[in-house]
Amino acid sequence: MSEDKLPVKNESDIISVRSFGRNLAANAGFGIVDQCRITTAISELARNAVVHGGGGSVTIKTIQNDKKGIEIIFRDEGPGIVNLELALKGGYSTVGGLGIGLSGAKRLMDEFQITSSAGKGTTVIIRKWLK
Image: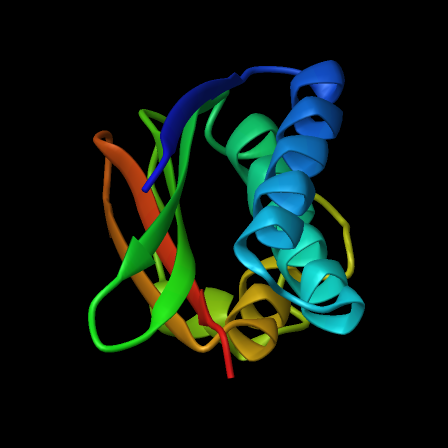
């Protein structure tokens, strides 16, 4: 299993992380549709880390237990999310966007976990499994 931790501090990093994730997904055996789902989720969450969290890091790795998949972990040390329940509903934005980043990523992936605390940042873990 391979694992890479990448910085996500600006628009260029978002593009690099998307590309890396898509390539890892393809090499792991995901089809085009799931590659697009994974890439879109990466893009949304990486953008959130940059815009809301002031940047952070992304760890992308293949995983295997009884099945094979991909796991992506986003970490930032930003202000945290004050109301997680509201942020996960979709349509809620603190910067005038569409507010679908978190809820969209959650719908696109098989597993979604988020922890956030005021002044300590946010960690989001997403997983997609090969069918």
